[in-house]
Image (cartoon, rainbow, N blue to C red; front, side):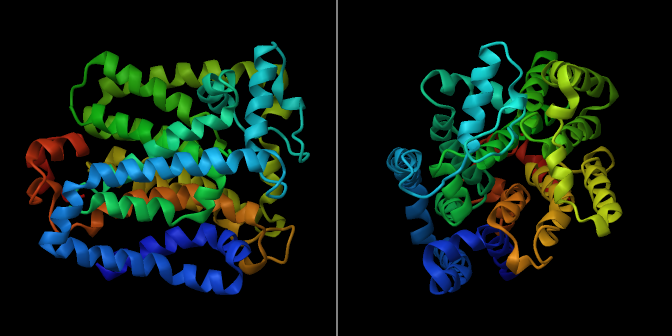
Length: 406
């Protein structure tokens, strides 16, 4: 158990170290380095105390409602201040979405335009599509009010074997300053992770049926296809989804799932490639790879994609296993840009916050994968969690939980 707490703390701290340092100085950074470990240790003591754990479980709806209300208040107060320039330069991720959607609605190619910070538009068509309704309502950044609470619920569901699951989820969410900063300033880095995680949860739920109905398979493929065409790095999530369906449902269902997924990706990507591939493809990402280690960087990227095929030949049954595979896959892809930036001194301590932020998706999925490991009992045998609830959260019959070694 201590090793799980240690790993959770590392994955919370690593992407957010610069945010903690900039916000609280050296003292703030030092406090932040111990805060996640202390918080999880206290919650683990609460979990092992039956009266306290039951109290948290009885009041978890109120705890989650309060946490969601705080998220809404943080965004509603902080985002307008960021837009007004009162909190520094802020981020241009929200503007990139709004510019891209506006150009598309006008029938123009969006990837020639630059943001106010001079950056290229990095969101891909899937991100534009999912943010479009909110853009029409006033601004793409308002999607954060939807996906922030959904992310909190996802974390809670992954801690379903714990009676104090709501408290663990709240610490896991609010213990990531980078995630909160991105959320409050209208960025979509965390949002991308949450809807990819939600799409994989749907794929897992459908695949767990063994012989799912075709319409369920197609719907899950469509959602996953849209979600992954938000950032290039999530290509491994497509491989992961196909591999899981193959390993769980067999070849016939894999063909249906892959065909639907391929159609969605083709519709979203091919028109832009045909119009101007050089402007559409994220060539700026290549510049982040160190020239001296370019071959190793490419090899690590390929290794990351291969890791995503694991569910095809390993009996990965649990959703946490899928999230774990994706965390490893994403981690391999970004390890070189994060730890060796050719534009600075090659030292992790001198990396820019923007480069360190690339580690957030891998770390966030690692947290999702590790939360269930804190439970001493399987979800189905938890004091206050019935077999039906375990099946609801995990996507397959509770009796299979005890037989699964994954």
